[in-house]
Image (cartoon, rainbow, N blue to C red; front, side, top):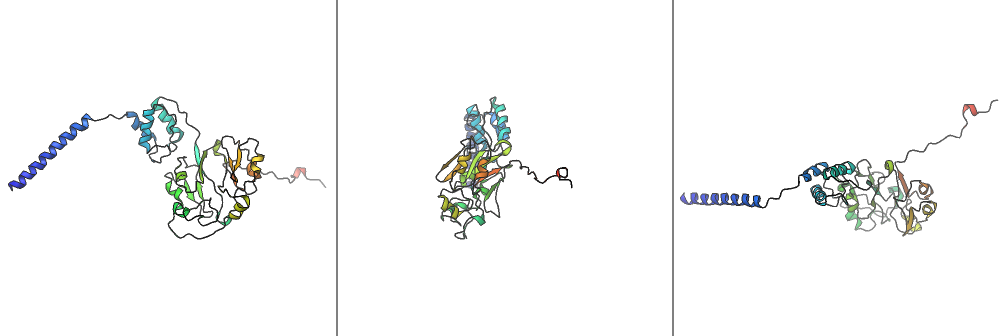
Length: 288
């Protein structure tokens, strides 16, 4: 019993000494954290989405305090309100850029893309992309497995069951870019939200020549250049058989949308155009 008691005393004494030493060391090397960090972190969504370029919300809060200003710092998830609140805490001005939203550069619905095969494997765009063209001949379009959906912590994406293409919910998208990073075909782009959410973009990523692209998908951009020629703001360029609209130069006139022969250019959140009837009213009718 004396041996057991002695062992217990030694272990207990060692534990007490270690605890005292750890307490002394922790006090000696204690670094007081800036109280503003906790205040800033409370304004952030806590999603740790990485859209700010930092490892998480806490790291972003630390970066804001260390920088002393918000130049080059932005939290897409928190939005303008959060950034204004952070600016107030730091006593600086918020010079953040325009809000951005994700758009999918593919419009080839299931019935418009020629199916080349059937995939029966793990539901992953990353894996399916390694198989070449996926289930269609177009090697540029949406694979529809939903890697972007899984990556979005704001529930802003879904795969449309009819088209098989990823769809973005503007009201939930924060422009964090997580979906863009996981897309193996790079068909998701962040674009300025636009006035009242109005945007125009080329919903295609096909770089094949026109005839080939049309065989692969009826909604493909064929690089004809009609949109570029009709644009009076020089906002559209055509390179590698694919048109691209510069969101900064675009004035949302939508002439390109009307002239595109394959409906590859999309518009969203524009007010519905009124349709006026040409039929005469009762007062304009001929009197017999």
